[in-house]
Length: 193
Length: 142
Image (cartoon, rainbow over all chains, first blue to last red; front, side, top):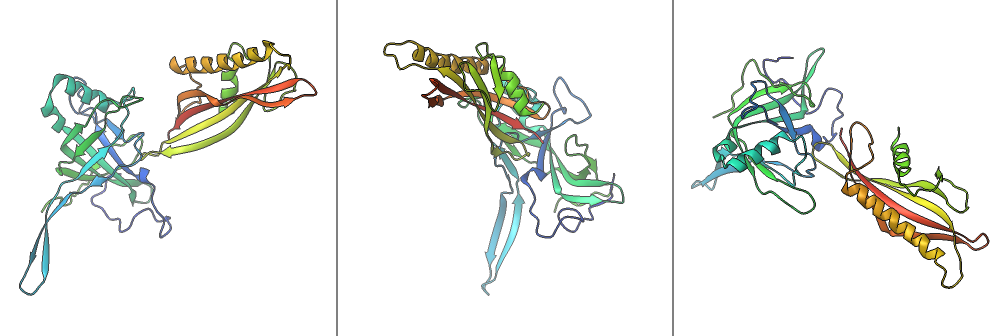
């Protein structure tokens, strides 16, 4: 379902009771693992990030400037929003294309490739519906940096990562949370100053 | 198959399992044994909705025992416990793990030294119940 713009005015759907909390699994972070490399494909393959991770948050790192005038009034200005997200322990598992890609980059010391990732955040707790379909808010960032923090651990091989979102983002929706396809809004909303 | 059935069938692959192996209940006679589920507890959830659960079960085996001094019979019974624990350890090392089906991934199986040994003695019938406790850790994906 392609929509022109966001129309939701609250979290959840029409049948969600007021006051109901939303499970953490409704805020999803995906990485496009088909975007570049020897297996490049123009069709995105979105890999869900966070299996085995008990706690992870998008940190907005909001920078502010404050000025207090002669009347004692303090005015704040937000100067930057620089979202990041860390995932730990991120145990390496067979089938994890992101981990395999990061390992390949590290082996070749191709550090510039760490800043070429497409990352999508899906807010499945915000729905858009028409008469037949339900889709969920999503935003796709291009040119994100994914940094492997370490490689090793104790019982299993862990590779914790941190994502620096580029904020070069497109707003849209996804219909499926298991095999998402990103559909941009047909009337793009402003994502900048 | 249910997870209980899968574990029951998995334990039947232990080479030295008693021929009188049954589920939950067994006759208290020499070389009979029973598989019993003790607990199934979700220990943690991750941010994408997967659940890590520990499935605990025991094998209760009935063996004749003796109070005769210097008898090797009781020692042999304890050696059977060691053999079983070693078999489970080897299965884990080789990743020969039970298969709970789609959506489930078994991570490891461990026989617990603590919780394994003599659980009950029936002096009238000279029967002792030996117990082996095993934990299976698995992840369920939603």
